[in-house]
Image 1 (cartoon, rainbow, N blue to C red):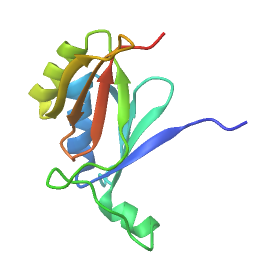
Image 2: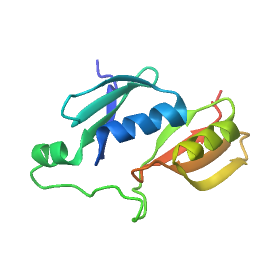
Image 3: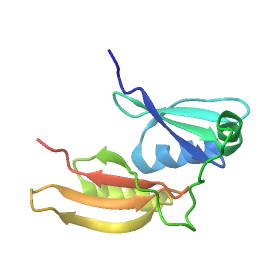
Image 4: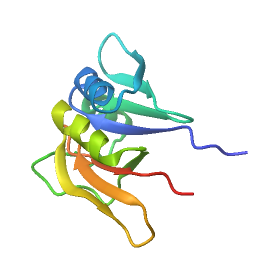
Length: 130
């Protein structure tokens, strides 16, 4: 059996990123290593993790493209379902997120918005489906 265990975002400052997600979305910190190179948040059935870019470089010999608010976002997003998208977007923006697309209702009835986190990662905030 294979199970999706976690997603890891490569960030400059693990503690700062963890604190952003705690403030923006109310997630609970599982831990951050003493040397601030890895951390995890409890976000539901899976884990959202953060690794320092230094740690990531030590793991990936060929390197990687670093996320930044200065660049276009990657062709990937993380998604959070919320009962109140507008309120969640507002809380995220107050914590430091940047609005990419304001909340709007899709033809299938779902409300969807997009923000960038403090490291430039794209987050979809949407009402649950089904």
